[in-house]
Image (cartoon, rainbow over all chains, first blue to last red; front, side, top):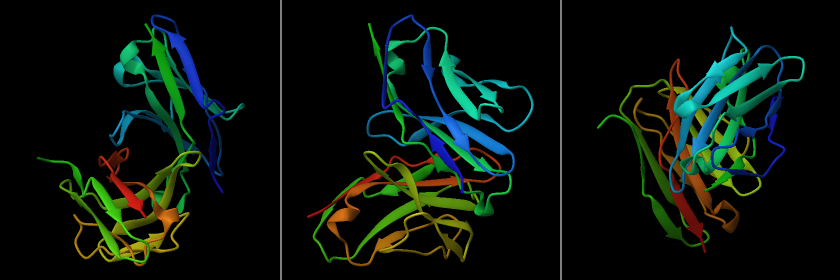
Length: 115
Length: 110
């Protein structure tokens, strides 16, 4: 079975400071990893993905994530956070062998960026 | 407009009633999914469909029924609603791409 852990329910950061949202995963086979963001009363929006290749993946809105196979982690980062980055962030994984291409989500991390 | 549309956005129903949540996508994506979002549980997969007339159970299928007679539609039915089914429901679709989500249906069962 595949699983995702986001160990922090909430991350608080001052505007302009670096932002990191942690994610670890467990999957059989090779992982396909994703980050999504959710704003209030909206569906999830895709930020970035890792399928293969460079371990550092760049995505939308200045976000990036680093795939670390040995630590089974895929942490989301942004060098300089904005107040508008305040939202709920979800990490997700599926295996290249997953039947039906099912995606498993973590519990989410709420990010609060203070001015 | 292209996209994925869920209706209604909000629904209040009583225990024991049948309710259907609608999902319509305009991309002709093969795969469609229903998730529910609850505090402390993140998103959990209810049912998914790989193509028209092909559906399969996800993580939490009990109490739900789906159908996929047309590629673009994937309705979710609660046959006899229970309070534990109070949640926000998201429909999503994809082909060889990340998931695209609708804006959700907030369902309250009283």
